[in-house]
Length: 466
Image 1 (cartoon, rainbow, N blue to C red):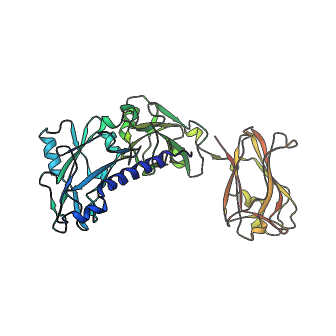
Image 2: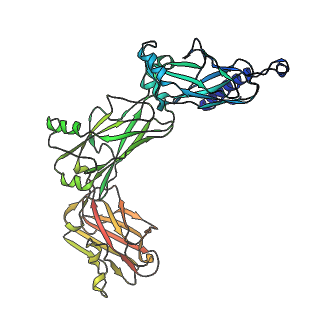
Image 3: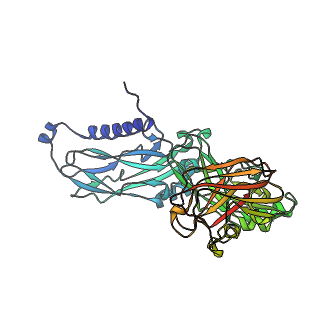
């Protein structure tokens, strides 16, 4: 026997409910021969005008949705095809709630359910189910209360009539009867409740114009379908922590001025964690390099589930010293190259480190060549950039090593690249390496180009990573 998934089981059960209701509606063929096929009276099946949920197995439930079959019944088999209007009656439901006829009740808001506007009654049917689909967020949001919706039938076609006492039914959903309190789904910041120092791990991305910090969210309980929630700043929370001295030497960072937030964060289906990117502007970090930038974020308005009010805010304290990359190329005390361009003064070796991507270093009769930076004291690095020049891509470097030394004799390979190519002209590519040993000398050793005997490169920059 092949085991069914939960989704398959849910779909099968729903189909069985609909088929069972339709089957019970059908009469034997012989009945139509004996019966007077006149107009019928139509009503909603209920108990004294009320449909209580749960009441036995009169509903289908999963993580995201509550499905309730509302059974429309005819006084006899339908003599011919006709249509029937269906609509919610919020005024009636609201009056019953206000009059306390329905205790501990809340009106089911129209944003949380779907109800067909009509039903097609086909010849020979004496009942037909229509599905009321309720978003489980309503059940979770109003947990402990009764959700109420009045459903009214109207305008039966073909001279059929509405039952005077059964044209409307009150659907009462006992939320606590559907799920336990410990089955509620709450959304929160994974690191809420503390002052989160950033970076807190190595999963951030450093850049010349921005630093990308991933922020983690958590969903409690069994995960269902995909959904989104809003993300925003709460400057008052961050400023209060600075003002009361909780964060000393703090400076408030503001959205758009100092960092960029997405409007929403997204949870994929059947996952309990999600991340969104906080993009902090490098210029703001550099302007406050000796202070503690502080920002506070909040989540709200999920399209599913609930916000944990105790964990909906995250306060982050940034450490600029660990987030800022520094270009140390210009602090060298000596720059030398293996070969020089003696044919064109505008394309000499110095153009490779002039911090201008519109100039370039060009060599003829190329087989290999190195370029070397010397510093007054040993420096740590961790990254470098190369920028392609303006002319033919065959002149671009293909294979190279970056090396470090403290005596200009013994060299350590820090990074090795093979079969490299640039996607466009004037493209800057950053390369990183893990060795953070301080070196007095750094050497870029180009061993081959893409093709031909000419070498060109617009810029080489050495970067100090935090």
